Image (cartoon, rainbow, N blue to C red):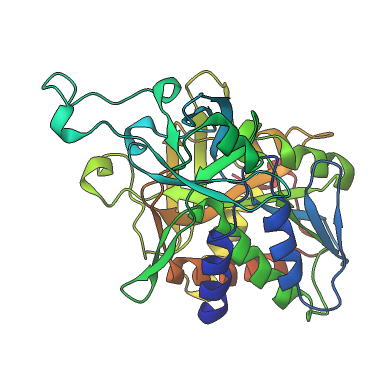
Length: 363
């Protein structure tokens, strides 16, 4: 399993897919789905695979888009100004390589400019350049040369795709968030395709999570699941800068979120359904899988909106520890992805016709 997870993750990390422009990622995932599973794409771009079964229906989903930029202006000298799309950290941007992706045309490499050190004044040395002031240099010397490549206002831009394995099991590079989730979901699809007994599971590779967190809502409105399980990163807190934020360790196994809340303008989050917390805790214990726990402010996933669909959806965030979120060099551990896959499959097998979602059945 871990070899397939590695292969899928490394390949998918190299495919550009800014929010709203996920087509190449969707096609790469569709090509990896096992024979016998049919997939549909809705108007927003969500890729949906349904495996029929009995009992409560489950929507198991992860997002396939990534954060980045949109071209805002092309200067006469060919330098390009951009608008930030998603939670791109300005402090991690200077001198980063990027790729501009004019639809239907070859990708164009570039770099985010950084003032020459020899000309940097003492007052500037410790100042982060704000996103509106950034420019991208493609090496092309005029607006006409840039436009000849197909680049226009609105062209998507992402970190230059990169994927590398460190110390055998740790992967670093671009869009680990959430191509790692996509790799897990692909492996779950392969296993479920050969199972004879399971609940009805809707596997959804969702769009526009990094933009407005609502791409998955479109799928949920149609599927009307009883249960929603969302796979995404969980902030690893095993580096000095995050040591006081939790107890999530890279390589320590999959995790579940007991509380998430976005306290910076978006008043939303997830307090999970107790039936699903019990399900994953009991399953982890029975399968001897270490299970980590997260409770974080400043975190928000698309599950926050999926849980409100229809009469309400029993929901739980499950995930994998990840370091350096939203930078051009995120990091995860393949062993955590393997444990998450095994745990998710085992938990799904316990959701039968009698599985209770009545909150009064849980303390």
